[in-house]
Amino acid sequence: MNAAASKLNPALQEREVISFAIDSRDVQAGDVFFALSQPEYRNNGFNGEFDDATQYAAAAFEKGAAACVVRKDRFNEHKTELARFEDRLIFTDDAITALQNLAHNVYLEWNKPVVAITGSAGKTTAKELTAHVLQSSGRKVLRNIKNYNNGLGHPLTVLNLAKDKTYDVAVLEMGMSTPMNEIRRLCRITPPDVAVELNVLPVHMEHLGTIENVASAKAELVEGMKEGGVAVLNADDPFALDMRRLSKGKTITFGIEAEADVRAVEIEFKRFGATCFTLTLPGEEARVTFPLNGKHNILNALAASAVGHSFGMSANEIAASLHTAAPPPQRGEVLHFAKGFTVINDSYNSNPAALLSMVQTLAHGGSGAERRIVVAGEMLELGRDEMEIHRETGKQIAETGIDLLIGVRGLARQMVDGAKAAGLNNAEFALDSETAGEMLLREIRKGDVILIKGSRGVRTERVIEKLLENFELEKE
Image (cartoon, rainbow, N blue to C red):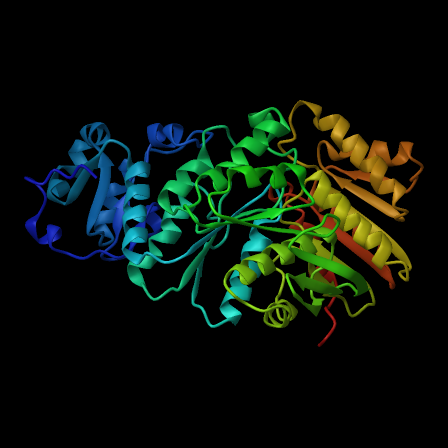
C-alpha cells in the first residue's frame, strides 16, 4: 500500500491491526476499512456496477475504524467529509490489490501448507469434507466460509491468520467465472502446496465461451502450485486428468470409473443419507459409510481422501472421518419428515452434470418410494446453447423413470418440454420457487422422495421453507 507516510498519524504507524473490513456496516473498533470502488472491481474481474465505498469511509471512522484504505482520486472527490481523517487514510492505486497484497504478506509470515480446491461443481462440499478429514487427524484447519472463494473473500479469509497464527493448514476453495485469470490471482496470494481439480464442466459459458476455455481457467490452479507440491486430479474427468502435465511435483489421481490412486469400489446405496463404498489407497483399503448421496459426492469424498493420503493419513483414519462428515447446508442435506416423505435439499447450486447425478441417485435409490419427484430450477450461465442444454437435461431426467418433474423459472420451461417429449407426461412448469412450493404442497404424500435442486439465483430453498412451514421433521 502506498501510504502517505509524511501525513499518516505516527501512533497509527506503530499500531498492530488484526481485523479488516470491506463493508462499512461490518466495521468494528480498531478495524482497517478498505473503501472499494468501481475501477478496482473492474480491474480485478468483477462483473456489474458497484457503489463507491469511499462515501462510507467517514461512517467507518465514526464506528471506530483505525484507518481506511482509499484511492487518492476518490479521496479528492470526497475531501469535504474526509479531510478531518486524512492522517488516518492510507492511499493506494487499487484497494483490492492492496487487500490481496496484505493477505499475501500475512500468508508468508504464517508459512504453513495450503490446500486449494477448484472445479466447476462441488467445490464447497469438497472443501468441507477435506477440512473435516484433516481436522480428524488433529490439525487446526482454516477454511473459507460461505462463498468466500473470489478475489475479495479469499484474502479476507487469509487475513484471519493475522488474528490467529496457530492454524496448521488452510483449505481454500478457489472460484472463477470470467476469463480474467481469477484463479491465477488467488494462487499469487496463497500458492497451493496441494492443488485439487474436481472437474471441468460447461458452466460460466456466457463469459468463457467454450469448455476448453473453462479448462484453461481451472488449470491456473495447477500452474500456480508450489514447486514440489501435490496435484490431486479427477481421473474420471479427461480435462482434469490432462492437467497432470502441468504438475510441479507429485500427482495423486482419484476416481470411480477410471484407474486411479484413490478409488471407490463396491458402492452400495442403503438409504438417503447412507452410501457405502470401499476406499482404496495404494496398498490399503477400508470400508466407508458416507452420509452423502450421489456419484458426484463420492468423488468429492475421494478428493478429500486423496488430500488426507497426501498428509500421511491411513485408509482407516480417512474412512472413520468420512463416516462422521455432514453435508453443508443445502448441499445434499437429507430431511425426513414425520408425515412419511423424504426430501433431499440440494438447492445451493446446479449444473447439468450435478443435477443428473442427483436424479440418477433418486431414481436408483428411491426404488422403494411411492413416487420420486424432482423439483429443478433453471441452470444459469450456460451460454448460447442454454435452451438446448435444458431440453436435453429434461429428456435425460425423463429417461431415469421418475414420477413427477417440476421445473422452476425461466429456462426450466425447456427442461419440462424436453421431459414431456421423452414421455414424462407428469411434468409441470412453475414461474418461481414460491409457485413451485405451492404446487408441491398440493402434490406431496406419504412415501414420496423429493429432490430439490437449483441455483441460488432461483432461490429453490424457498420450496424447502414452504415444506418446513407446513410439515414437521421426524424426531431423531
